[in-house]
Amino acid sequence: MISPQDWAHLEPVPDGAKPLAMWLWLNLDPMGRGPAEPEWIASAMHPTLPVSTASDMVLEQLLTLIDVGFLATYRAEGCEWLLLLHPLKVDLRRTKIHTPEPPADRPWKSVAVGGGARGRDARAGEWARERAREQVRAEDAARADAWAAVREPVPDEGEPPSRPLVLDAPPMFCDDHMPHGAGRRKCGPCRDARLLRDEWMQRKVYEERLTEHYEDHPDGEPW
Image 1 (tube, one colour):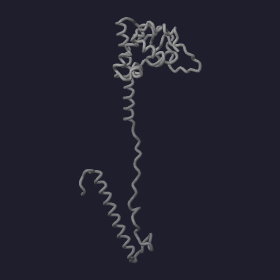
Image 2 (cartoon, helix red, strand yellow):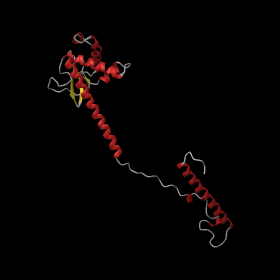
Image 3 (cartoon, rainbow, N blue to C red):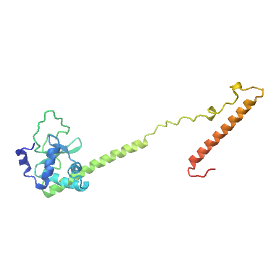
Image 4 (cartoon, helix red, strand yellow):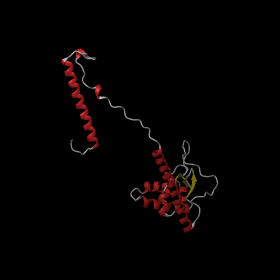
């Protein structure tokens, strides 16, 4: 709940930046801390505006809040964080805080340092430069991971061997002379079985060769 004392801290804030100040009150953590990401704030406050336009507007208003002493920033865990200098008073019992603590030495060296138009431009440039460095580092890390994945040899698991045709072929002899045949004796049914087997094998071999042909020439004419 926003108390009269809280409203007093909002008085120095220009009217154009007051909606952002109130949004930060209600959306940063109970300690008044959150990531210094204008895009995140812009997407929540101005979802219908282009991201670049909304982000530039939010960045300008953040710098305004820093100028009037409503907001500060600090670096921790390699990132820039926002810090409300007058957060709302809330009951912190049973509340877990996940944002990092600001450095103990104040004033912090961050985009909050400086003043005036020149200081504002310098802070905006420093903020933009730091965000650019973070993006470059992230892109370098992603590129390194991609190259590592390319260089890493892929284990060749191989393909299982194809089943020999002979294992599925019809029997070579008749039922009476399986599996060793009639020997030197002539057997008509054994002869018929061999002819049937030979025809089956030739048909399967031809089918395999046709399959290979159409795999190599998917748009080709039948040979």
